[in-house]
Image (spheres, rainbow, N blue to C red):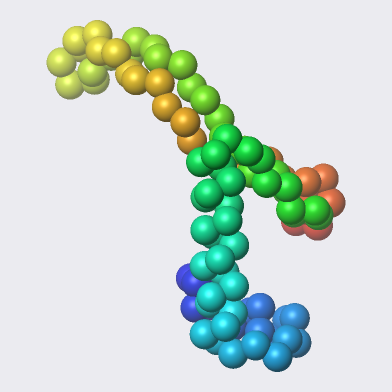
Length: 92
């Protein structure tokens, strides 16, 4: 689903009095708040949907598949989403 399709679905399903531009602004604001909160190290829980958190991976060794050489893979932080039980049950 594209952003435009999501906006159309939200306007149709929620029966809200927002224009497409206003709905797009709301989605952009949600994205911005999520990114800012996760960057600061916090978690974001959306009741009934799930939880966004940061997953920290440690530095590790790996192997270059082309040469077979051992390489070091740097530590990193990545966003992780864990679905709520209600959401899992609704999808299943």
